[in-house]
Image (cartoon, rainbow, N blue to C red; front, side):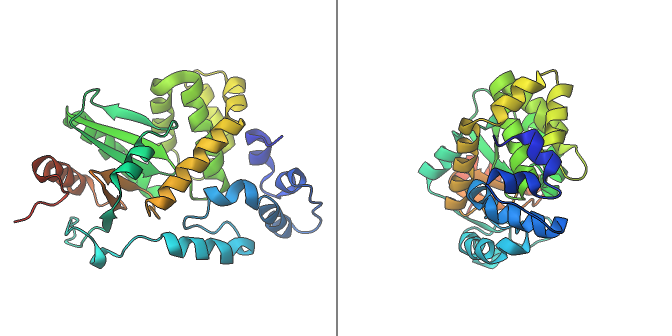
Length: 278
């Protein structure tokens, strides 16, 4: 059985993944890891193909898939939303129906208002450096704006450790509810270095959950299916980088800073767009 714990422990050599797919792997750890990645492509490809290459063995298919998913460049942006450096923030339209599907994903959780007039959604990865850098400001935005709800959706894109961590995070929500999911998220965004399945299970234990119950949920087919759906929808919305933000049918790509995001929120309330004319 595919296991968060066993895969995290043994991924350094790739032996666990290779065995899972019925592949005998002999030779150097690097060669073994490459064989394992090829063997488990059907398990992980959907969850890693947005823009990161796991190994040279998958470079070609990953890059081809990523190129199709890249958003418009900043100079092709739909709206002239400026960051603090004066540069245009990359942005594009997203169908409202697709935005709603992403917001309603079962692995998501929220902070802020329980009766909001506006929802801002962050698409993130547990190992995204800019997501970690933004975390404190994102919480501060929710605390400062009583009518804003911020929704968090984990759509892992940065490799196998992110896939493992996302499984555990969703399992934490299933086992402990949204309060535990929020506590887990705070810990994961404060982490340094690679945040994988083992570290995620340690956090689950630290916040008071039965780690065996969390691990069992994390290894379930249901959790894997929801994460695959999250990545499929992120691809469909052309969210090729993390963090990405959805607001009123528009995607903002990257972290332009708290002030820029708050400016977009104010504009949406005023004119239903992230930038008002004039």
